[in-house]
Every structure is written in C-alpha cells, then in structure tokens.
Image 1 (cartoon, rainbow, N blue to C red):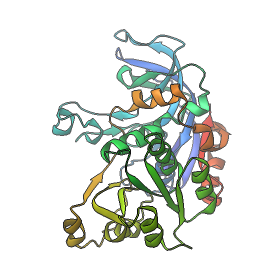
Image 2 (image 1 turned 120 degrees about the vertical axis):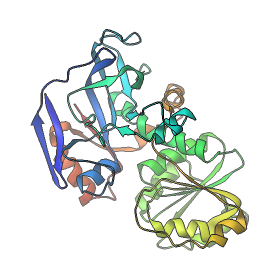
Image 3 (image 1 turned 135 degrees about the vertical axis):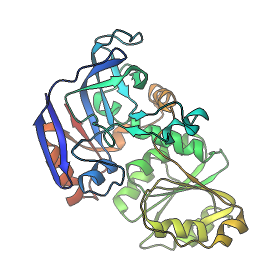
Length: 338
C-alpha cells in the first residue's frame, strides 16, 4: 500500500508500506479522504514540538471498514466510519476525571504515531463512529476539525448571551464561528486577510475586524456596548494577540480559551488577570465530542463545504503542502482523496 511520509522536516515522499495487521480489538479501515491540518503543515516544517520523525501524518480522516478483529462487535465490513485520533491510557489522573484528551500518556495519530495519510490503517474499535448517510467523503473528513470547535465551546462555557471574539479566521476559527452561531451568541471574527474575513461574513459573523487596518479595541468596544468580549477564542497562535486579548479586549469576568501552542513566553501583568477575575483556559484536541459533531452533520447545521477550498489526489500531497505555503490567502482547508 502507499503512505505519505514526512521523513524529516521539509522532506515528504510517498512510500510503499506493508499492509497493517490488526489485533483482536482493531478494525482495518480503507482511507477514503483526509484533511490537511495546520498541525500537519507544522510537522512538515519542523515546527510541531510534539511530533517525531519519520511520520505518516494525518489525523482528520474517514474511510470504509475492510475487516475486523475477533473482539470487535460494533462494526462490520463496508461500514463508513470516521476516526477519532486521540488515544489515552485510561488510568492517569486526567483520564480518571474524564479528560482523556490531556492524558499523561497521550498519543495522537499522525503526531505521536502514524496517522491516516495512508491507503489502509489499523485503529481501535473505540476510536470509530459510523458516518451518517448522505455525507460525501470529502465533507466527512471535516468532522474532526468540528470536534475541536465542540471542545472549545465546552471549555469556554459558551452561552446564548455571550459576545464572542474569535481571533483567527483560518479553518479552525471558521468552524468555531459556526458552533458559536448555532448557539445564538453574537460573534466577531478578527484576522489580517480580507478573503478570510469575507468567508466569516458568509458564515454569519456579526462583526469582522481586519486588525491591520482597523482599531480592534474600538471595534470591540462598539460591538460589546463598552463591556469587552465575554468570551474569546484565541486561534492565531500569535502571542501578541493573546497579550492584547487579556490586556485590552476581555470583559470583566470574561473567559479566554487558548488554542495556540507556540513556545514564546507571553508578557502578561498579573493585575490584568486578577483585576477582571479572568478565566484563561487551555484546550487541546477533543474529549469525546464526535457524537455531538455527528449530530450537527445529521441536522445540516454546519457547512463543511464552505471551508474546503481545494481537493487533491493523495499522490499530489507534496503539491498540496506547497500550496499552503505559497498561497495562504487562497487556501482554507485542503482535502486529500484516496
């Protein structure tokens, strides 16, 4: 079978690999489509602190069941499935309190172990969910990104009366926007690319802000009736944006959910946090959010087709990765077809 392998930073190739051999608790899946995530691009460029090499990347993938292990009871040959890439030990402190997505011994497919950018992959039965009828493979590959949106709105305790600021109108910012809008909350989206902000408008943003050309603090003050944003999702990974959110943009008693994982230290006076009694929350991956997202897809209340900008054959993966670097303004989400 063929697999897309990042041998080391900057070096991607398609290799012949042996077919996976499944255990009694595993399912063999023929991959049909997979999304390229920003974290895959970071691994390609050597900027992901969690990755090891060589690595078959890809954690946003869907496919068809080929065979099942002797202990598998919920799936059978021919089922269309989506894979949750998060693997946990089940015994550490975070697992015991129901937060397996930050397991002490966390493994993520495509990061810590080989992922879905291969023609066949062996996965544990507990990672699989049946796809709803009528969803294309390309759209179904977006389920994992929407699980991130489901996770962050849970972490931020999103409420209908919130005035939300989403920093970053990339794929994750745009799926978060869709999750926010279905709750009834008001949402502003900030970015530096007008094309991305236009996408946010089309997805229902109540306010869009180009932080290069507009006074962000003034716009947020007007948007929130001088209160400041009650909930902020920081999805740019830019430490200076995070500093600005804490120092200038958050309402008293507000919440800030941090998605970025840069290693640059932030300069944040303690008084900015203490005086407003802010909640600053980390978020990582998803904590069993796939059932919620599958319900969104069944009801048709999210729009994956508006996020996908390009579809490539998997053999053209190197071209797809190059496109994300050469034309970032024109690329939102790329899906690979297998």
